[in-house]
Image (cartoon, rainbow, N blue to C red):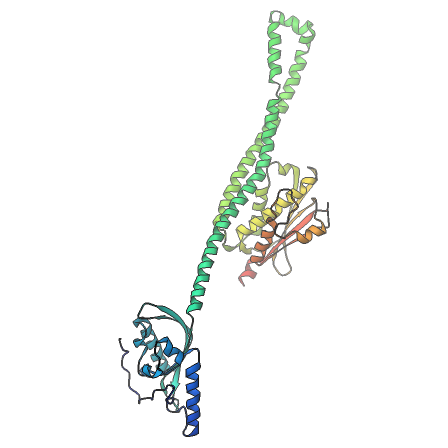
Length: 445
């Protein structure tokens, strides 16, 4: 085994083991010597931690029975005069020697250092070590002493926890990707409902078109082309041709206007689907990133995700926004929460007529500087019994629903340091949901 570099030698210090005395200066003569020896021997024989004393050359002069067992030595006296180089691999022994020489040189202890111990057979163990200067009765440094606790199992446990954490993060990333896909499908599904209505109207108008009436009129005129003037003047059917053409013109004008309107709605819904997909892609790219952003922009994005072209004709949307600061949060998660609240509000408004639906979106600043997103509707309302359970996992009042949207929303709000609350005066009175999040400056502080 390599040996540490020589340093100026000190007077030989007696080995201290179960049957020997501690270093000079620790005890006095007579009875005190016997008591001190018993105390030291009892301590070194029974202490569960690894305790050791070394001289200025970093050679062992005393150590605990537990440390002797660690070295595979039955009699602690066999270790006297040896160094870490006799038991550990070069890498750890050299680092330990350098640390001890620095303590002897400066007198500064090393407290609570987690050390990676390497052994000649390739094993690796971990120890939490504290090393201090060993002084004589006059205060002169004559060596070092220390105490170590085996941390191998703890380090292995922490490594396993770290591995599990990374696996959980990876699983969360895939879950987040699935959640993004679900949001896209839900938002697109909302717009598809509006798009489907437009397609149905166009199909019905084309199916009921009066194209066959024009063909019948042409056939009638063709049969009377020999005396077309007389037919139009004297025949009762001929005299109604001009009225029929006038009615047909009005019909086609109305049909053309309806088809153009529905085609316009159709195009808007298709554009909105493209916008939703593009918006979700942009948000997904920043999923999991906590950053400051404008609350107004994310509220508008959540509204666009849930408003088909036909919704704007059936629902009144009122926006009220105070001057609010930027917020510090995961933009993608905030969008998911707000989109879910707006979608729920739309479902609550289904019971109202086309001209009675009111959706109110508000941004407010709380007294403590936080930002409130308020989604309010005048829809079906919530009973007091349901209001107490509204955020529970699996609870839903919808005929087709999984009861996960509001539950996941309130969890996300809490994880971002915010709150999500619901309020309603009962059936038919509408509902108000409030998402409150910390402002960017407060969050940074």
